[in-house]
Length: 424
RNA sequence: GUGGGCGUGGCUCAGUUGGUUAGAGCACCGGGUUGUGGCCCCGGAGGUCGGGGGUUCAAGUCCCCUCGCUCACCCCA
Image 1 (cartoon, rainbow, N blue to C red):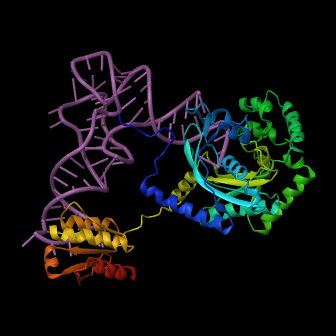
Image 2 (image 1 turned 180 degrees about the horizontal axis):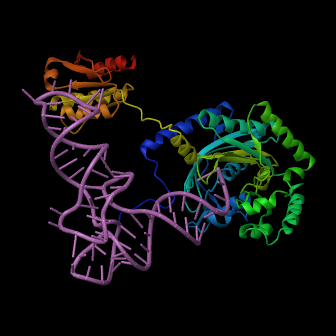
Image 3 (image 1 turned 60 degrees about the horizontal axis):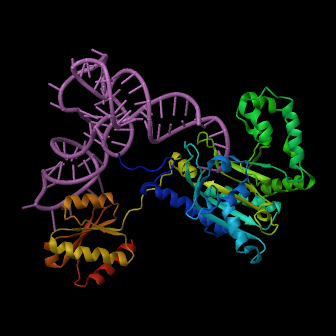
């Protein structure tokens, strides 16, 4: 049996790459419009970085990380998300002294050892961004507006759900209230919720069991337990979204899987991807920079899954066609092959997308290739033409042909062909 | 980690109650046009029927094991 890719690892084949490039192009453009700069960070980090940022008791850290010991005995992890690495870099290089507020984005692979399914892979790719150094509610709204614009310009309609998780000042109190409420339903919940009642009580709220949800109807809401600062912040974020005309809904049951989130959290939801409904998600993480040994600066960011975006684009019939070439050189006979070979390569140096058949196949076969390659023109050179110093230029869409002079100088010929074709 | 579905040429699939050289469409290559594409016609190449074991005179078809893919739970992008 031949070697196959690892489970959950996928090749992105040429016809699929087209749509990926479109996604990245649009996202980059919008990031730049919002004043973001790209940062590239390593895929491997010390395991400790993720344990400290994502949280020891999270699923990601507990059972999903690709962690191994390197040849020096150090514990290394393939990044399961992007924020930790970007913040590590931010702190390590003291980026905060360059300007008070930093806007950064990055694009790359993430790794989580989960059971693969639709929209979920072990190596997946994210577009992600972070803003460090400001806790203004208007920034939260702006970041969500940016995510919204990316999806809009991709032609996707997706709903925005947001919530506030409070801060270290008010969340613990809410947790207690919630635990007390759940105590009242002890023994009546699903297995998972019974377990999480103690370990991660906030989690129970987005349980999918109808029975549990029925019980949670009267559960206390985090939004009623926010401290004054968090409450004001939340109101201001909503106003910001209203001002910017971004449609959203508040989901007080929304919880995030990473421990570092504070205050604003949000998800970009679709109903077209089966179980993996989140196309993007993010939120504020005001204590994280300090926690990683940096200055006490607030931050906010989000990530979007490229595979999920690509899936949605394909479902909505937005498959991008492979771009055609400019000119296909069809040569017959050895001398013509020689001329065609140098001509084709010279055309490429002039900026044209040019192709020819190196196998010496029949003209019919070469014309077929020209058609399949999407060429706008075909230049037919046979030894007959060569003797007369001519070639036949065929317009592949109109099927019109004309005889053109093949100048002695291949470079000059290439230049005039390039000019002619580019002017069309 | 737990369930369900599925594994036949590159892709999508047919394969009757187990029975002779395993088929089709698409894609690929060649020919029909001594030098011309997208349609049509003809031909060709391409398969250890996921793998192993078993039952049988005979297994793609039945049984067991195993591997892989996939969807869902869980979790999340």
